[in-house]
Image (tube, rainbow, N blue to C red; front, side, top):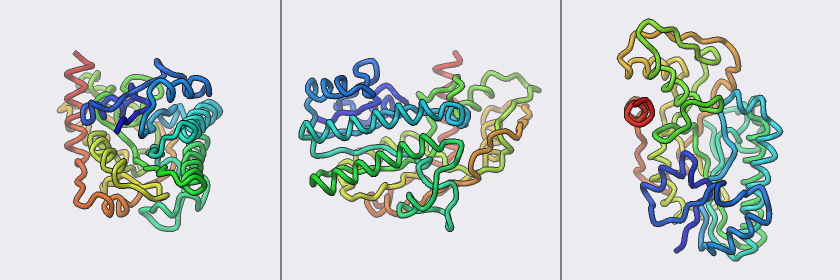
Length: 300
């Protein structure tokens, strides 16, 4: 089966290549997926049997909050074009990545499950991005129902690991803090956004890369399967863990701005139904590997 991966030069795509080097990886350097003609030409050029759709405009909480229109437009266009032209070109299998940002800001019970996806609006800090991901799920489910195609979605929690974006304004929490800690000297004070109180499930990227081929083979429902570890740690706890990993004498200062939603932890029960005995990497182990990778590959 010829498998095409969009977002091939992105964070997940780069790591997925280590697990599935025989798949075909494309990026924005090859095709602009916000443009219909480019998307159509991609399908004509490659003629895939299946698609793993990872391409997206992504960023941290500050980037999301300040660029809501850009996030909505680019993600909506990419997703709409990919799903529609996959159908038009006879691709019967599509597996697309959502985000836990698509889930409601608050739910009645935690961890939330796949059935909670539409039970309320996303958090205001990533409102546009969250809705664009919901629309991707709606489109995949609609094409499944109307055309009988095996189009499905999965929903990873916050990701981190090697090959992440470490130094830009759009970086997520873990890579951003790793970069700051790695560059700091003993006695330095490091600023972190928010209060440190919100809780997050941090998914080590290798775990997702192990799950994706299994989901491509076995996930044949319209459930937005949540891929998330059981660990649900506070920003403060993770910050302290990263400082401990660095073995430096540093002070973390929380600026109180843009905390985001307090918690957004999801259940991995449906994932374990599909992939029994799947094991997640602990945060301390994954964070140590990521910090060491950064020191060896970025901060030379």
